[in-house]
Image 1 (spheres, rainbow, N blue to C red):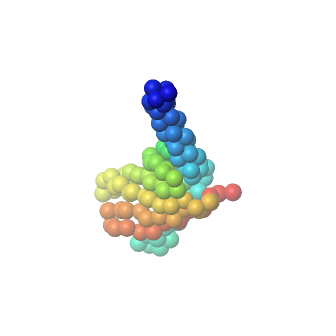
Image 2 (image 1 turned 180 degrees about the vertical axis):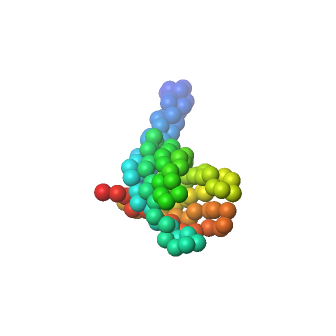
Image 3 (image 1 turned 90 degrees about the vertical axis):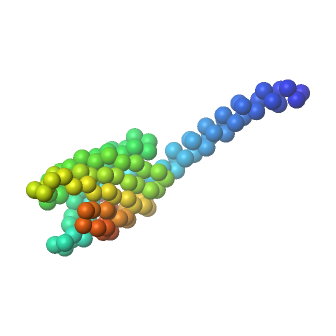
Length: 126
C-alpha cells in the first residue's frame, strides 16, 4: 500500500502544477484589440491608438499617433501589462517603457521616458 502511494505522489504533483498553470492562464486579462490611449506630454494631452495582439501572456502590436506608428512587444501577467516602444526621433532612438493595470475595458499606468515618468490611461475601443 505504501509503495502505491509513493508511486502516485509524482503524478499527483504534476497534476496539481498543471491545474495551477491552467488557472493562472485563465486569470490573465484579455487585452487583444484596439485601445484609445491618452497621456500628458510637454505640450499637453497626447492621444494615440494601441492595437494589441495577444498569445497567452505575450503581447505585441503597434502604437499610432501624431508621431507616426511604432511596433512594441510586451507581456501580460494576470492584470499587469508591460510593453516597450522604440521610436526614431531627430535626436536618435528613444525607448519608452509602459506598465499598467488592466481593469475590465480600461488600463491605467505609468510610462518611463528619457524625460521622466508620466501617467497614461487607455480605454478599449468599441
